[in-house]
Amino acid sequence: MTKQIFKAVCLAAIAVFGASLVIIMGALYGYFSEMQMKQIRIQSELAARGVENNGLAYLDSLKDEEYRVTWIAADGTVKYDSRTNGRTMENHLEREEIREALSGGIGESARYSSTLMEQQLYCARKLADGTVLRLSGTQYTWWTLALGMQQPILLIASFAIGFSLFLAFRFSRKIVEPLNRLDLDSPRPEDIYEELSPLVSRIGSQKRQLKTQAEEKAKAEQMRREFTANVSHELKTPLQSISGCAELLLGGMVKPEDVPRFSRQIFSESQRMIVLIEDIIKLSHLDEGASDMQWENADLYELAERTAATLMPAAEKAGVLLLLTGKKSVLYGIPQLLSGIIFNLCDNAIKYNHPGGNAVIHISDDEDTVYLSVSDNGIGIPHEQQSRIFERFYRVDKSHSKEVGGTGLGLSIVKHSAKLHHAEIRLQSTLGKGTKITISFPKRHIVQLLADK
Image (cartoon, rainbow, N blue to C red; front, side, top):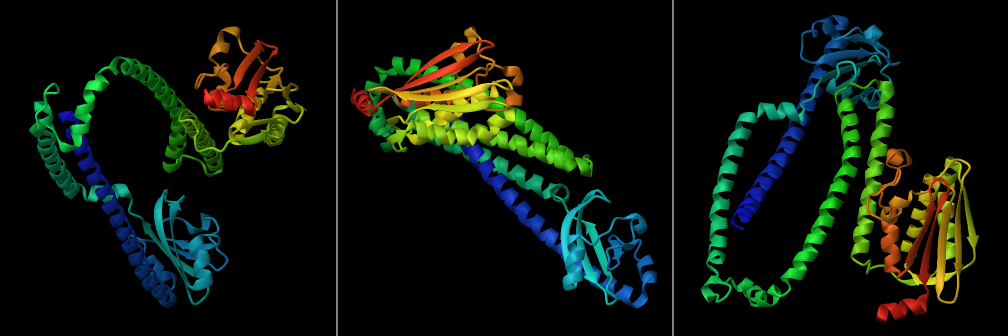
């Protein structure tokens, strides 16, 4: 326990220091960027006066200055550039700072320069003859700012970490010392914190429950580890893809014409992560009983109609005919979860199907039960895997899991939602011929009887 308290205090102190350092560096970065822009603004005003008085001769005298100077005609044509051949440069009329200068006399911007391949600050001024003179300079980055301040940062960090270790050691020993002296069989009042007295008094009764709790905890821990490992694996792939694309973009290694493709890849992978996180949240909510959700009478056929309409574009794109049959059937449940059940079953029926296949939703009922079935003539499920398809992150067709999308949590959400409604699930599937999943929902009077039990 001493080590845990020691680590907690250390981590808290280091976290506070790190957050403070980030805030300070952010403030300094903003300050230095503003100072840079102010300096460029002043230099651009001086340069504008020089050009208006002496013309091109004055520009030639600025070639050795630290700032890049560009002279642009009113139509956006580059007349002169101190760092490169202006005649070969593209038209600048659509550049942000040029537009602002032409319309308001002065324009400023900060962006990546494809010519110099670095982040630049720009300040442009409109001259009396209608042309625009622009000055630009390299913008400070976090990295250059940090390198410039590495000595004081290292000194402060060393002191802060050392002081944190000292405080953590003192506090952890002081907190744990009375606990180490505590005799649970005959505790002395001076060895018990007032806040811990109720806990100590309950330890005797808790000992009798330890065996059962230990078994349950071990099982829960195993499930948690498996779930955490699966979540980590599922998140790692899109994160690696996003990181790789972003690294190429930040490094300037992507051709301009390829930027949209990399951007789409980043967007696609981020959307995949969002869907995964949403499904994890749904499962967590269901594990907790979804007690905040409203139960009411719901027409399962009407919910199926809405869901089918939502999935129709995806079905058409996949070349799958999506049909709804049956009749109005009212049951007592949570509409959001019922819609989610229908959606996940239909989504699988579409994804794991063949072009020209079909997916059929059928709703029916009798005196005590409402039946929902979703059937397809798709790829089917091997018999040896049918008992596992409702497990979290389990996929039958792993080789095409990325191609068809999804998170591997859909059927697990179906299982938990059905369990919450006291429903039974029946699976019928033949490899290569298709799958049919039927869920039997008890009607309101049966649900109330089950709840009373």
